[in-house]
Length: 226
Image 1 (cartoon, helix red, strand yellow):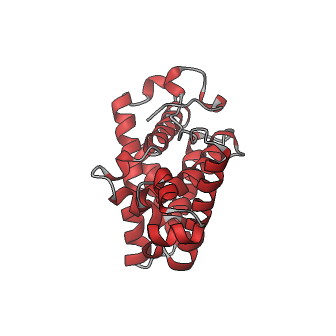
Image 2 (cartoon, one colour; image 1 turned 45 degrees about the horizontal axis):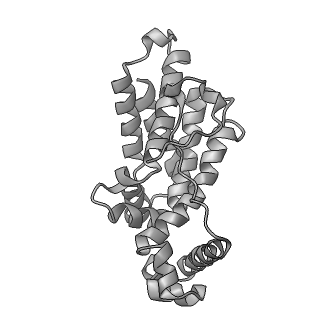
């Protein structure tokens, strides 16, 4: 994944603080941009009306009013459509995390920001669950092949480091765990927040999201700080 540096003043200026962001779409000709937007807008409408099962390439070309050749020049398959829709939505959340108001954005403690991230991430996955599951099931490595995963994990690493540096009983950088342990904790947090696990809770167990969020925040806080 190409590493694109965004405005991240809240994390400091060292290279170790830089987050890999989702790359922006490469510049396209005006007509290609219009066609791409038509396809994505049509895909979003189909998803609302018919769900992921109704999102076929034939139906998408018909609804968007574009030829099959135009469609396949932009997207190779249904998973590619889902990935593009998700990337648009993820960039908005990235901006709120990096530049938005606290506690999701800069200005709050690491613990507060981690809890806010958990709530925002769970809501994001719940709103887009079918798309996320589709993109992850289309790759042998699942979520680890998604360009967004390094961003989420690195963000959690930074917040965990902040917790150990500033919020433990004897806060100091010297008390923070080794970087490998910080990364392992961050990956454990992301495992708790996996789309498959969220699907299990919401759709197979019938759990309510607003009741689930504080429970998961408690679990993630324990992973991060104990």
